[in-house]
Image 1: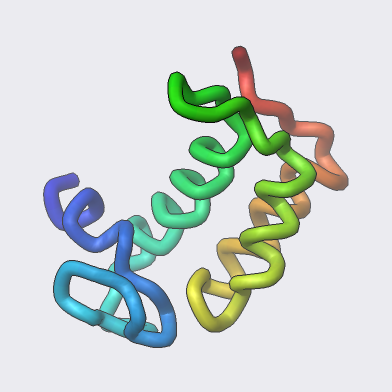
Image 2 (image 1 turned 180 degrees about the vertical axis):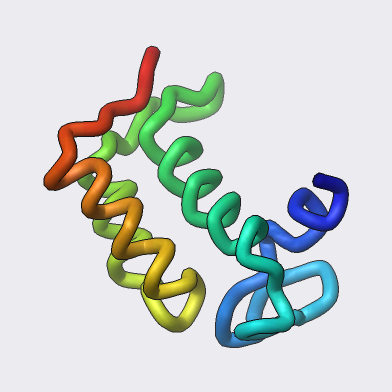
Length: 90
């Protein structure tokens, strides 16, 4: 779990942090957490800003698929929300 937390801001193209890992250097669990973190953060209200909504959150991960986010993970997330009717609990 510590490694997942440490790697979840790494990006597939190496542009992330803290170590600039890329591609398969990033463990799958961290790639999943990366996508989940972005979706949850954007779709949720924060004290400093209102929610951007799930539509914008999904557009963001779709836009970053392959470069920032793992393509298979993004595809699975999009299917969950768009085809399977998943929603984030309040």
